[in-house]
Length: 358
Ligand code: 57M
Image 1: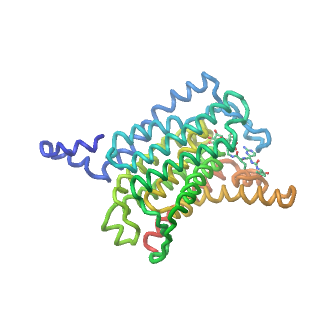
Image 2: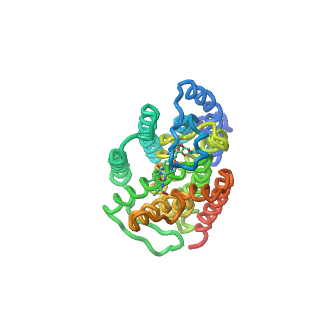
């Protein structure tokens, strides 16, 4: 909305600043941070009053039982703050902004329903896995139809490190989009098992995508760095910064000992949104690199479950997802979390380095 103020710059020249992506990116991110910062305490109070707390699995590491009753569904405030900041700071005629919000809100709605059922039933029994999967696939199909048919996005797949190798996937891009968005959404959901564990890697990936979107949307920078030019992608840089700002605001309350968890409403929606951004700006593989922590967590579950079934009861890790393995090696929760943060920052830096190495 503020973007439109630059139309009045003929009368008040300083309003011209609202045209610039970099300016709106910084203040969008700050707005999102402040909204989460101020809205979360009343929400925590409300959730406590309603006794809408987290159910804790009995089979988990025993010290998790102290977390019983910690309010959950903090994702509601994260989503609300992102939506408000986006409406305030981005150019609303940009279709990528609406697609990003579509993914955030619809995946958020699935997570919300899942969390609500779990709280109501006072068991770890939300939506059935198959129900969730069908709805999620349906949402990605809508996303795909808008992106590729309505907006005419390309179905070419580009690779980091390789400037001369591309793949035209055609309709295969639909399957690929499902894999990217569902993979990202569920990987973030699996990672979200310790205080602050998921939100920092999320902020790192959002930061990396903010840089990539800015470059992808700038015809000169994109051609200089050999990355595909995507018209209008620059505005996505603002959205990514808003994601990061909201994430930091949430970390304020989710840092150890957590006053609130984000819930599936947070993890499913934020993860899916990162996947959607990677598809919109044609930097899908960067998600695997920048989101290395999410990849490792998801892989640990796939390997553990696969090996468990194959060997009829043997395990590779003490427990999956990976963070539980380290907990059971007697690492303190904050040690696991901070070390995963460090790895995630390193992954983010490697992802940025691909801009130059190609
Ligand atoms: C949900 N959710 C947390 C909170 C958060 C297939 C299987 C591997 C699935 C996996 C699973 O269900 N993972 C996804 C992870 C839960 O947190 C809630 O859920 C939201 C995110 N979806 O926002 O609302 C618990 O995590 C802890 N937590 C924190 N701080 C936070 O900031 O401490 C969360 C956020 C919370 C709290 O304790 O209650 C969760 O873990 O439930 N399943 C598992 O993760 C289980 N693994 C398992 O069974 N492994 C097996 C193999 C064969 C699959 C094995 O290795 O033997 C473990 N989950 C837990 N304990 N908690 C089992 C042990």
